[in-house]
Image (cartoon, rainbow, N blue to C red; front, top):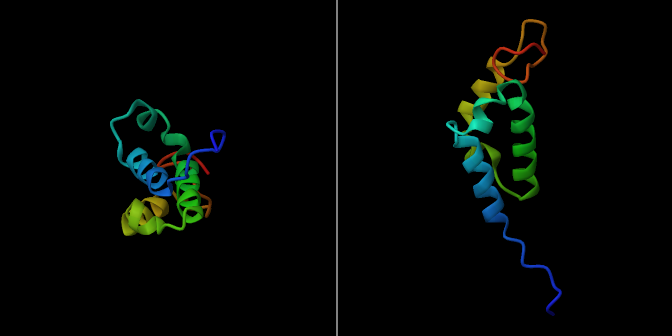
Length: 85
């Protein structure tokens, strides 16, 4: 029907999430270090909802190493490397 929504193309959504995570020169990436952990959370969640493997799409071990680098001695995690938990 003419009113039907377009087909959902999950691969394009996954490709966009990967692109955004790798575009480290973008103004949005540079200015949002303090909330990068939230972006990782939403990116991983979105990829899982798309039935994708976040480790394969977002760097696996590199992502785990970065996440652990955001952990403070108190046990909490900051929004990025440096911000307080």
